[in-house]
Image 1 (cartoon, rainbow, N blue to C red):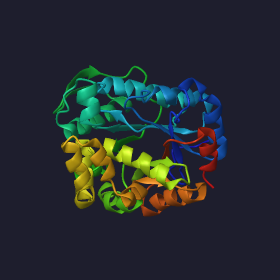
Image 2: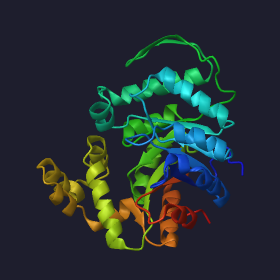
Image 3: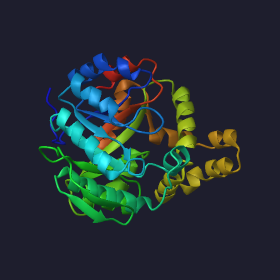
Length: 325
């Protein structure tokens, strides 16, 4: 198949796939293309880097659109980000989307030893610089958060490379819509999409919204909720995500969990996560129920749903069962 950068009818999945060594992805990636998925999106936290899985996939399934969700704006310089994006755009035949974001203070500061300073400004400056470099311009600029002197890519891409911004709250959502090609959203319910989408599309209703959607493919609701509670306590206590859900109006729903976490009571925090919140933020159930839940995100305004498989009993089976219909 040939998945162009047109955003109509897109349906993605996150790589690397859960429980599959990166070197063992080839056959599954090829099958993903045949199953009707259009996109592969990578992440970068404590596993693989964002670019290597996509470089491999560009050889295994050349028609798929490839995207990073996301490359942190802090952990590489803008020149290196642009070089990596240009290389992937070249090997993928122009089917690459660069997703940039702040990441979090945990990943940037605690794990990489880099100050998490002025995250909004850093992302804004990186977007502006990288877009200029990918367009073949020579950049000599004093940005607010860094300075680049006299850099031009030796081999800029032949065509435009879409740049998207990971966004949670209004400032970054507006930045994604104003200066990038759209927004990448994460850790939100289908109903929450109706809250965030208007900020992205204030100036252009056609801006793309990519949503990473966590999917636990099991009909054992208690097992899925146990997985979901662990994920929610791990993620939604990170300051950027806590602030996001406070803004979404979940202060009452999450207040007891936040209080227990701050007090060092990890079990209490787990116990305080309500089932209805897990059911909103983690897709689970039969394959048909999961697909219907994913479709609710699209109906709410998501352009490109991207599945993130969580604790599947069998990854290959889950990939097949959740393929678009």
